[in-house]
Length: 147
Image (cartoon, rainbow, N blue to C red; front, side, top):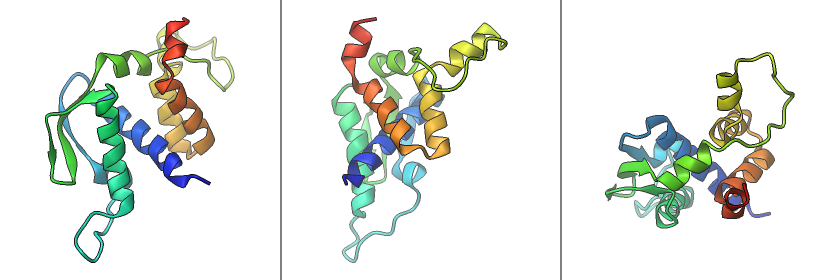
């Protein structure tokens, strides 16, 4: 089982959602805010989990989902913000797994159908399979191109 991939999905989704909540402002994105405190190893280096999370955030930037100005040691990305690519994908409407809520106002249904909202729910519920599926949808450019 590739647990590091599940961690990647969780870290990527959580990091992008923090930036989504701050959008369009630039913020410092701390690894500890995403995964909690991890003790450094006996040489003072960040744990593998910490390094994996930071690596996921840097990968997101390299792939054009966010931008940042610099790193703050191994602790954070400074002045991070979503790119248009990530913003458009997070605000895209995706089919909901739950029941239809036709009685809700259109604005509420619109927000609840966004990928950002559904990712947030999957994180809150700890549903790793749903989180993996939604995160893969975020990265799948073919989904957008065919709409």
